[in-house]
Image (cartoon, rainbow, N blue to C red; front, side, top):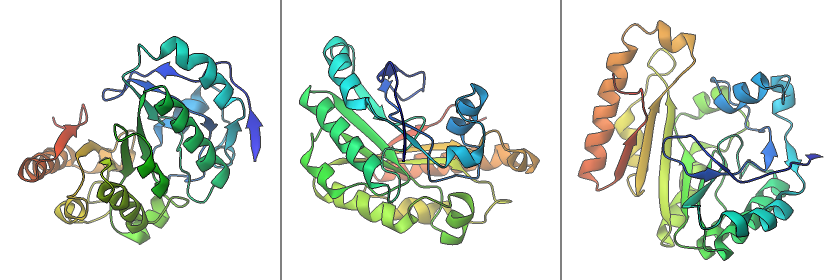
Length: 252
């Protein structure tokens, strides 16, 4: 594992459903093959040169020290901190990153700061012992393992993600799903209701289209497809008392 240092850690995010965020790792072992906004952003600004470099993450070694400095200064401004928008806090099988993420969440919770987590890895069961104000989420765009191996080769199997989320739900934690970037039928034929039913226990679902993809643009009825999917998700959430957020630009 390689290490880097940074001058700051917590920052205000411009994401529509976010507040503050932190990214204590540069890169991600999950190696998603669809257009990854985080990878494209880091490459654009010269922090990463290639995909091969991206999938060999570097840990920010002074993460906890930065939090010790920044939390007292910012805690009255922060509603919640998202882990993470430009990396994954629980990379599948990478114990050093998992341990650092748990330590960071504890520091934030000790300061009465709520944390929202999103991962394509496995949510550790010990998160159930953290603040019940926290929200724990997984990315889930399919249940097809062949598709997962093709599009998210280094990420956790879908059913393992769901199982780890269900454990936290059963322990009384708030849970959510990010169903983005949802693929069009020319990428994979699948039943959206079947995916939703597999996670009908969650408190919130965020649904969004695939962006920056020529394959999606080439699917002639992609706008109509996403309109239909969004309507289905909204109706499903309404019927199951689940909070629903449709990402900007998904409905046209």
